[in-house]
Image (tube, rainbow, N blue to C red; front, side, top):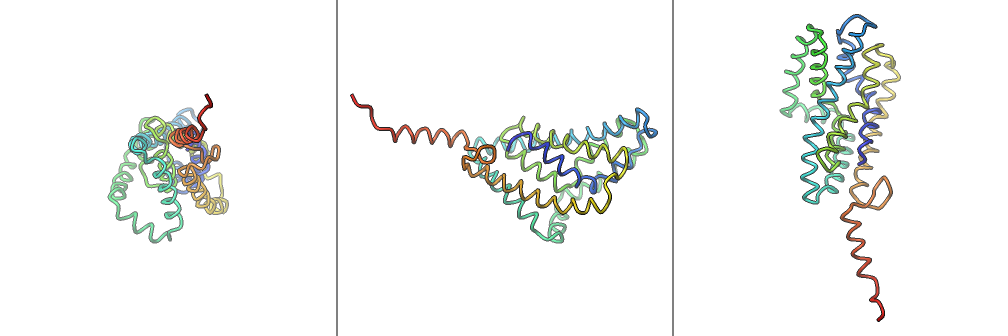
Length: 242
């Protein structure tokens, strides 16, 4: 998966972020409206989220690198794509029950409790910390981004992928925190219906990429596959006449 698609995924998925993280962005207390402190507080908040996403990119980049070294990167891409499709198609009730049993979701309650003191502080450092904690809250579209970081094939590509993902969410989230709920509830509901289709499209791209079909940009052949093709072509060449 190309690194810069992380930004595209973040940008398109940021409309989902309005519903999930919008209340936090709207409640940020950093200064009076239109003051420099007001804007900087919201920039710090969003940069905090980018830092957390980059950290996730580091973790999943390390995992992805190990898979790549073991020659399993293509399988990881295929399985990630199939997993996204399964998760999207599962009924919401089943997903909610399954996810609520994960240990990570118990930690989120502690994260939400930590917001109280930071909101009371209102300092720029507090805004940055709110962004960092916000990045740890469960989000389905972040998981799609992590699948991309996992298939990036390296530590630095994984970090860059998720950093770009976070930067992709920044314009919409910044506008939300500055001018409020600028997208109406009705429009948001319509756009939310598009997000599962977008997730499935990305999943299909993950699967195609893992299949090494030789389709430029979508499913290019890996270096290993190209090397094997070259070796096959050499073997098929007739011996030179003396």
